[in-house]
Image 1: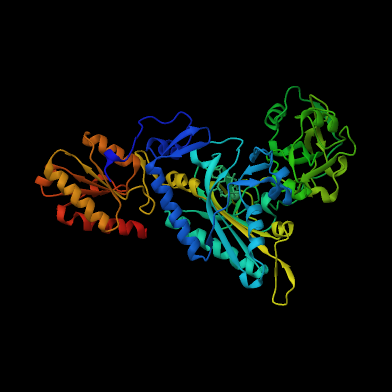
Image 2: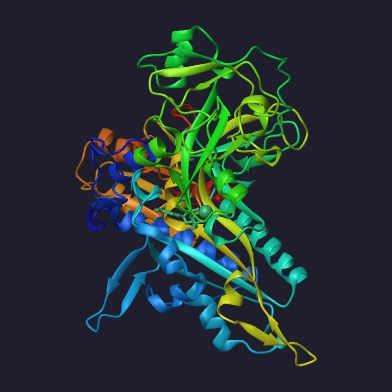
Length: 576
Ligand code: ATP
Ligand code: MG
């Protein structure tokens, strides 16, 4: 391929909305262009890499025995109503109507659609197990689309779904996909680690997310160097010992005018935040619930939802807070709220807590010397793991202190059980002709997010450093004198020789200064750069350099040996 024919436009300046390096580089290297917020067009370079990632995903799915299908993006509302998710998916789902007023959604995922499909196609145990997959655009009306392809409104996902006869089979399917995911990410040159996660809307059973550890990641990961435990903070368990506070005098009111946050009251009273009880009123399936955690902790809404068995959990609005407690947020606490029937739950670290400071349920006031057992109506069963884990907490597995890292979720594998197959009555006949419900799993890879995660993990100050497996082109021949016939001929022959060896190659044949070409080659990040120029040729050869190595490693090779050297370098890079 020739640069002058390839629609490559690199940019000097970072896009104004880009906060993280990979987003800046993605746009500057000319891989994508923003169409509107959260919507991107792929330019030829981006398309090439996307196609290479798709190819790897397909090869690994096929190797795992999964069968490729494709289902409509436009999904009728009835499918979603069958499981009740038409109403519970919330504002993230793009909903629309056709001319006959039939409701539909732009698929954010496809559990309903695939279950309905497989129900119609599979009837006998002989057809099971079966895993199907598609690589299809998905749509989510994200609250905050950002970071380029990382969180966009339209993105490419590989979604696979397994259907099994029984739990052991479902387990095998899960493990097969888990192993396929490890291979997919490794082949994309990506270090992605499996971490335990929460099942969310998909079901409550076992699930792992694959995360690329990076400061730009949106998820917190509890990480134990000791035993290898890794869990999303949404899920990471805490097992704090009960508070060992001695008895304290009766509680009394303290005026804390204007001091609302724990930090403000702690500073005002000259006490450590740990001595405070942070109390928040949530609306859980529409009912108010007060949640208490230690002052230096955050409420974990995922754990709260699970503990209460609630479908929806959100901070209560200010009117509801006032009605429940008698005060505004910042001054509420578990001692004698205005509504004596208010349900109060607390983090297990507060079991046995005494001598603590809480809001007084009266604006401008706090209480000191609160003994939660003595002064509140929190029942013994109201204590649970409700706070988010933090660095230094004991690992729930081995007890050593955990670290907290940031992660980008590039994939997730789920065991779904029979949640969807029951709703759709997706059954099969076993060998005794009895009707049985299929057991399901689902498995997603964010293909477009993976593309950007590779850049986030593999770049330097000059640009992207592509792994050879998914680089838009593996080799770039910087032709320094496009109008000099000798050099142009060497470049042409080298390109042909490389293509014949399976190395995809681009010749930078622009009439530009060498500096411009080198800068662009570094920005786009081709794994190998070959410099071909009349001067170099007169001195005996072409210059070959790996993108990830510095200049001192440049090899000078006679033109006749260049293809072999480049091909060997690429092969070594592919092996990792
Ligand atoms: P997140 O927690 O980041 O919102 P999710 O857990 O809701 O993602 P899944 O339903 O598990 O996403 O979708 C499978 C994969 O699709 C994710 O692992 C992720 O890589 C990718 N993905 C999800 N949402 C987006 C998005 N808005 N933009 C790009 N990729 C996405
Ligand atoms: Mg997920």
